[in-house]
Image (cartoon, rainbow, N blue to C red; front, top):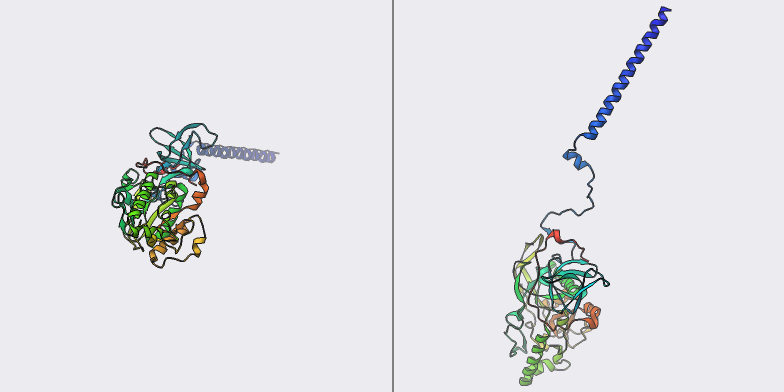
Length: 400
C-alpha cells in the first residue's frame, strides 16, 4: 500500500514538472514572436521586403542615352511651330475644350506627347495640338547633324554658275540664334514631325558608315520662294546660257524653282549634302548623351549645292516627285559622283523620294499624302525658338 502511494506521488511530481516546462516553452515562444513583431526594421529588412513602389519608374544613371526614343534627344523641351492654323485644346482629344487658335508659324516649346497630340506651351498659352501638322526644330532632337543654313548669311543660289542678282551672296532669310537647349548659336531647321523622324533615320545610316548629313535648308518661307523664282526668271531673260540651262527640253524652269507652293513651305522637303566624318565625340545635353561631329570633310558632288540648272540633275529626264518607284528605271546622270549616289541611298532607305532635277533635294511623299490639301503654304517667317534642356524628370509622357 505504501509502495503504491509512493508511485502515485512520483507520477504527480513528474506531471507537475512537465506542465511547468510546457508553460515555460509557450511563454518563451510568445515572447519571441512579440519581439519579432515589435522590434524596429533594419536596412537589411527593408532590402528584403518588396518595394511598394516597385512598379514606379526608377531614376536611371545619368546622363543617359535616348536609346528608346525616335531621336537622339527626347522631344520634351524641343522647339516646335504650327505649320498651319492649329486648334489648341485643353486636353489631348478632338472633343476637348478649345482654348484658342494658333496662327501659322506660331513658335512653342514641346512639353509632352499623348497619342497624336503634343502638349505645347509658350509665355502666353499652354495646351494640346495635333502634331501631324506641326514642325519640330531638327537641331533640338538630332544635334549630331551638321547644319549650315547658308540663306541666313550667304546664299549659294546660282544658275549655270552665274550669280543671280538679289540672291547670290545675300542673307536672304536669317534663321539663326542662341539655342538655350544646346547652349550655343545654332541654325533653326524646322520640319514636319514625321519627316524629321526620317531625317534621324538617314543620319543613323550615315554615321554607321562614317558619314554625316550636312543640312542646308528645310522650311523656306513663301516670300523667299517667290523672290528666287522672280530673280531667276529675270536673269534668264537677259542671259541665254542661263535660259538654256533651265529650259533645255525635257527640262523647264519649274523643275529648279517651283512657282507655286513648294514642299519646302509644307515642311516636307530638305536640301542637304554629305560629309566624311574625321572626328566624332560624345556630348552631354541636359540629362542625355548624344554625338557631336568635331571635324569633317564635305564630299565633292557633281555641282555645287543650289546650282539651278540641268547640270545638277540626277536623271536624264524629269519624273514626278510623287512617283515612288518610277525614278528607279531612269538613266542616272553620268556626271554624278559616288558621294551623290551614297547620299541618295541614305535618304531613299530612310523613306524619302529624290527630286530628278536636284541632287540635294528630297521629298517626304508620305507626309505630303497624309496632309494633302491641309498642308501649309509657308506664308510666314520663323526666327525664334522656345526650348529648354532635356531633363529626365520632365520626360513624363510617352513618345510614340
